[in-house]
Length: 414
Image (cartoon, rainbow, N blue to C red; front, side, top):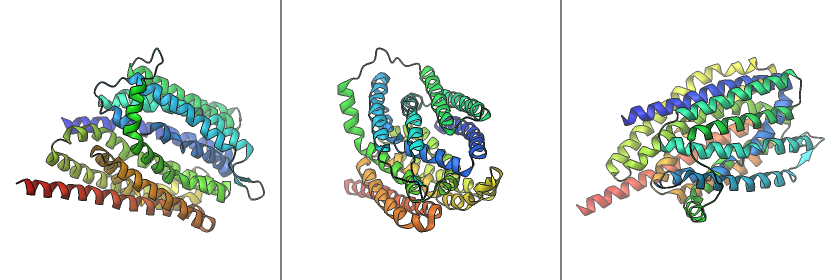
């Protein structure tokens, strides 16, 4: 029964992601063909910069909300909205200081900063989506999550097609993304059937959950920074064309690494329940670790051979094949670390995760700064592979160490 429930809800998430990604592919095709590699490069710069702040909104709050039996959704909702307001103001303030070199074509132009302002309103929609996802995860029922996600994606496609047909600028395309994200978010809020009025924030709950989640929150922030910083640094150090080439390959890779996240979301509630029985917990961990690993290799093979289809988007994107294939090689690490994160979170190892991802972030940033000027997007892809491999080793060693300690304690007590 447990495995069927996990499989069903993972399928809902994958189906939602699959349909959303197919629609996203069509949208990418429209944008890339309409605006070319330079226009798509502008689009990637803007969206990638704002995406750096997305996990700050998450801050690991859902993981601890699920552990509180009597927690009210309204408290989570308004706490996250308050955080979103601060992030919205911060990311737009920092955008004023982003460098730009008109001669070399590097950095963020004034138009791109304006695009950041437009796209940053999606922060509030993302806040709603994250909060409602906690309800679906707690109920172990992602059906309505799937429906809401598909609704938002369809609206996004329709709006982008209309704006492209009318020959409107990339700014209108960004506005279309924001509108569709709110449509999807409001649909999810409707399906969640949770009361959010009157607006209020439980200060005691806010302090309690923030104190509990800050190590995980910082870990997620470091995780996102080290995961997304390559495109940001590429935007500053190389041309918009390089950003467009890498951006397209990363767009498809981003879809693939979301797959283990969905499975992790479905497994996490069962990890929490199994925590009290260490034998059951580690049997469950070993079984799903193997499933994640096998799934990663199954994913690599077909996408390796179909990657030349990037040329169908536009001939300008032929160069996207190489970085995409390098990124594919990192999938076994991304699949397994996605699972190991939640295993260690269940065991209360948030501070360890925070330190690991902080050090990985420093390494990632340093290597990208050193190698991007010479090797461009090839360096970005290779460093992503290396960094995630190092994270995998640290997480696996910590889990094995924890298990050995428990086994020794058990032997001593006997």
